[in-house]
Image (cartoon, rainbow, N blue to C red; front, side, top):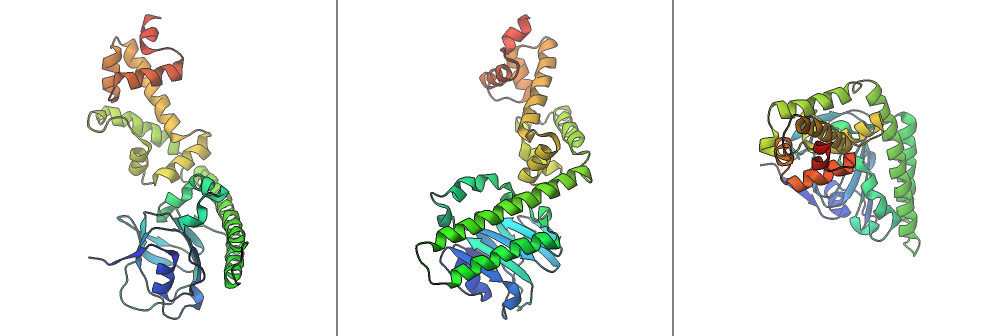
Length: 297
């Protein structure tokens, strides 16, 4: 059984790899400077960003294994497990890491914005592949944060560091938007048709009787993407959410079933709704009339 390092605080990780302890809530690590670094498979209670400046092999995320290439940036959120199992050997690696505690976010604008940064739940295979210029912008901010943490702490320290982290997260969001747009134009140009075919096949195979309504998570898994990355790709491609696409598909299918002579209850059951009332509310919200009113037209 692989040993997992529980990263309850930012300095649990810093101490493990021999990095300087700078602050209880924020840690900046420059791997190039470490003499006794080791791999670790981590269970995070904190937020973390990792920049790899060399190719890294056999990284894990959940049950999956991936390789990362130079200038890849990976983000993890509390509750996630990732990294590479410790072999007991000291290693020399290059790159940076930023870890920050959820306590830093309490009652702040940054804390309110965190749900917008969906890339914290992307998988390792969906890491941000940065250009040299993008990497330099992120590393400059990391160096500024580290310089601030080396100073004697005063009433301004955490506000300054929080604003620097907020700036960094906005830059990452901008860079991911470019990557998503590029991905949509190239390898994912047929993503929407594959999504629609997947929904169609869901009902051909009668999966609604086992699993209920199709979900974004199910569709993402079938397309070998994380739910948030898949959702962001669909949003970039269409300007609408993946959830909205599923609902639209369901309502179009509901129309066809009702027009074939099925009752409201039969239609709800055939689509996979647990309760007919839920189906009725969704139908009225979409079409402006109830299913019963639609039948009587």
